[in-house]
Length: 261
Ligand code: NAD
Image (cartoon, rainbow, N blue to C red; front, side, top):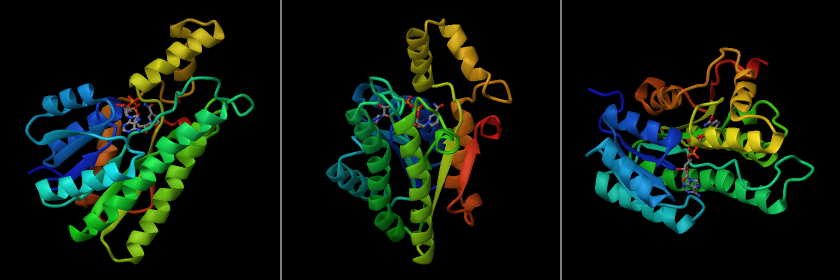
């Protein structure tokens, strides 16, 4: 029997990176999983790779009507909703991202996807989870919510917001005796397409090689290695399962010690 057997899950931004690893692990541990993403081709392929327990629905997390349809469709098809992983996020919009030069449009776009996207997910999951007898919402924040990163101004702001939003949702749901829990997960540097594109950009922008950019990142991780997507998926799996039935409003940091610096 899997650790989330019989549960119904939605994972946003699951076409690649952490979202895919999370969706695959939840399916492996017995959940029925809907993967969503704006990238339809990659999302369809990702769901097919996971197998019969997975399906793909195209979704942009900033669209409220889409959330309504997604949640209603999931409940109608799978009989309820128990797990929502708000994973979709962006960090690398074009242009400089320091507080002196970051364009306003970039600030707005990052905060829209990372902030409003998570808010809307929580908002529409709560009634469906209440009707399902309880559930677990897991929001992907970041190490950038806990330590300062000068070139990730809007990103850090949005991810700190995600952490605080998670606590508000947790308290609201606890006081309402809903059996809905909400926690945030804070990855450090996990090797995914998002991190990979950051090396490219840093090497181009600073006249260093890609390898030097990679080394600069590695030097910030006390344990001396990048995380793997499954390191995050295991944390999410725990929070999604009944093993964490008394855990709400917490921040689970998975960062090889980065926050200690
Ligand atoms: P990624 O870029 O590999 O994957 C993100 C996915 O989200 C992509 O498939 C993308 O198409 C999708 N997406 C983007 N905008 C969307 C939207 N509006 N609606 C629906 N889907 C959308 O990124 P990742 O590294 O797997 O990161 C996943 C989450 O973890 C993000 O929230 C990210 O901020 C967070 N995170 C990642 C790291 C890391 O080291 N990789 C560190 C800290 C936090």
